[in-house]
Length: 227
Picture 1 (cartoon, rainbow, N blue to C red):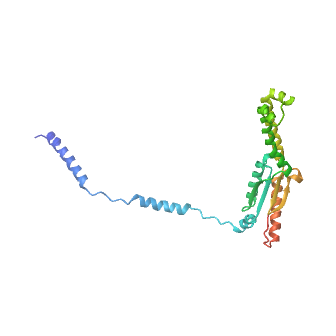
Picture 2 (cartoon, rainbow, N blue to C red):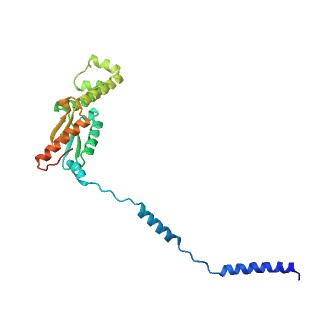
């Protein structure tokens, strides 16, 4: 057997022995990586976690406590599209005086206007009923021959019905509107649109309500200072 054949036979045996030795050899032990990572992360958190800042609590309690136990009532004309202004004032007061209770309510018109406003729909349906069924209603009322105006109205019944409905709605809206925007703080009047004939400004209303709260606190003997 020459040298080449020995090499060809010995090389596979050497590789087989090397694989068996590698397979059954003990693996080197390494430290668990997660412990090191946890330790590093914990150390990083300790190094980068900021300390909580301490703010003085006296300022918050002095300013924020003035609204507690007080209420502001805003009575406005709901049929005059004043709700948006009332909501804006409500948010402003709740922001400036935390804890205050702001109540929104409708300011009704005077009693005569309310009565007339309830009669308008009756008149509307009465006119429409006469236009549609006047030929049967007049004999019931004892009128054998309808008046001349009935025939002219009857000739243009659809235009008359539309005009009656639209005109009645306009009149009813006018009678239901009061034009009011009244502000009360703890039951006492602060601002009246009916007297001033204008809306209050946000800064103006804040000052008026704040002064009223200060006066009520001083009168109660609490001595809270408003700024």
